[in-house]
Length: 88
Image: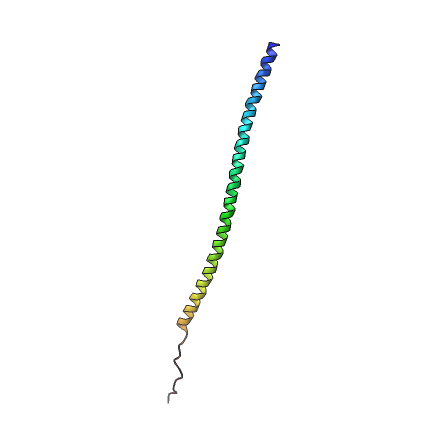
């Protein structure tokens, strides 16, 4: 009977060791899932900010392009200073 008690004690201690290792793994997984959720939220926030920045830059690009076209167009248009007298 003494052999059986020793075997059960070894099995119980192995189960306790495995249980503690599993608790450590579960804690690590919980930590990693929390970090993943935080990082995902940060990435989504950054993505929305980048989208707004891109839209703003696109609008600024169109405004600058349009104003440059108007400016260049004004350089190449002929300025007329009143009616001219006909040459004879």
